[in-house]
Length: 155
Image 1 (tube, helix red, strand yellow):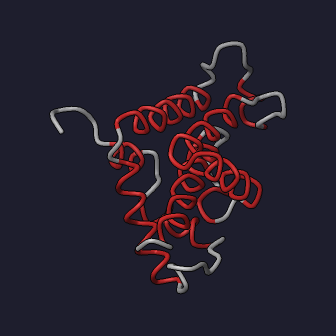
Image 2: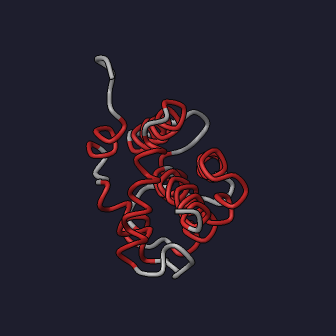
């Protein structure tokens, strides 16, 4: 991969492990043809996640979320007070747009619908992440989940 950063490492530095992502995804797991058991779902989700994380465009979207999160923590987001960032006010929709973009990029409209499910429920690590990263990871999970359920039927 050259000398650039690896997105898994960037996530790890942000306090997000692949296991955290998988655990959050599986909290909302629903048995489906091809992924009738939790073990099969975990295997399929991890496979789809690896495919998704190998995409440089997705890696850049995730990286953008980590940078926005860091700048928010430092109080350096343009046109936003630190207190507004910390409260994740309803007028802040850039985080939602990033999450939806990630979900749709990976899993199309199905991914967007799964993103909404995860964004509302906030299972696992999603409940403790900041306003940008909870949407970034919910988008990642939503898109990957959509692909997992869709492709599982054909495996």
